[in-house]
Image (cartoon, rainbow, N blue to C red; front, side, top):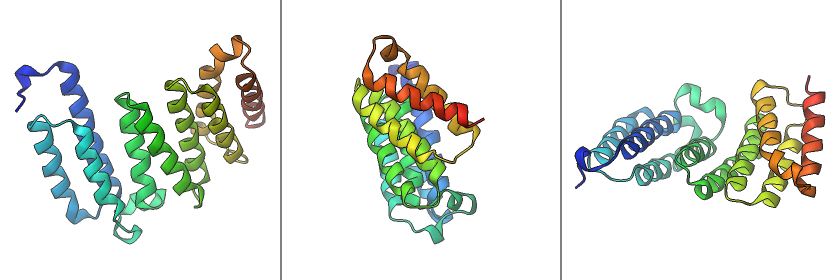
Length: 198
């Protein structure tokens, strides 16, 4: 069993982040009666030195079995439990640098939100999925996914969508300067979207 004396500050910060994230996931989509169990399991995982991501996955599995009728009030505003949990889980993995896992969960969120009335969240999930792909060196895949994000953003006017498209353009800059065709084409679409979003 690890003790705090044997693990580094980065490990402590990572576990604190994952603990907070697990609470967030649980609070976002679990029935209130299950929240105490999740809190106990997460605290035990952190005290015992278990990597927090495994516990987050356990929380995710529990939530995935939930129904929208069981969700706490504000959480149901973001759609089905599985979509909400995929989105939260993706953010956790992106934050700790596991971009492949983040990509998979953002893709899940995008697909689940895509068939609902949550077009903006689907678009933001696609944009984040593209960024996770880029972090793995997959520029072509990122451009395709970002193209889907821009398609989904048609008619959406929000500060978060605008910021997402601006980030997309910043991430594309090194590839634009090298003349990468997919980056140049996508950047033009993003620039047009920003101009029309005013």
